[in-house]
Image (cartoon, rainbow, N blue to C red; front, side):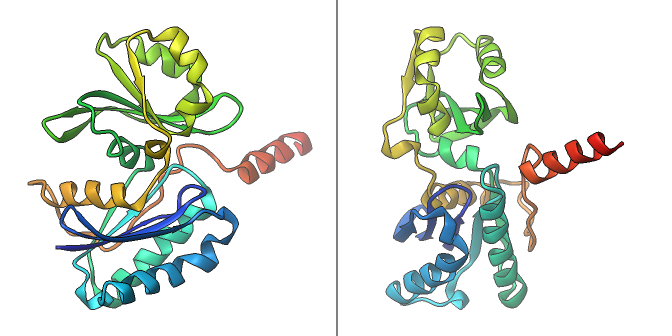
Length: 234
């Protein structure tokens, strides 16, 4: 099975092609402001270098958030267009789940994405025998609330994501029995999106879908500002 995977939910625009769980090619651009200009050329480039076309792709995989509101929309609209034209099924993967696939150490994996002002996007997974299981679903909360949630678990925790980097000192203070992912593992990547999508495709409950919805977990700053303006004018 050939998978075209896309991640535009962070500062890095990443695209890759996998054959099952084997990476054929991956390319990325780290300028968040140019995702809309860079995504299609990157896709065209990796398809040509792999000597493939969209007709050879069996599955589309895309990050559905949380993360950059604009970036998420760019990635989802692109895969939806491909699905419409070529009737290729889509699998959405949360950016938090894709981060968990960067970690290969068995046990609990806390994925944290920085949401500014001491807030994080958070989810908890457990890796056992190469199987990533969701333990605590994705939420947007302040770091102290997340710490309270994690205090319920006595097992060793591996922290991954830029949120773990930002709050590393506090997490080290609160959790003596923990690991931190390497610098490379903290980056979101389309490869992990593809790996997770392949696992989802092989689940017994899998049903083909040709559309995808974003997962934001919180309101955009524009929405927050509009609500404040309405309250002020009320």
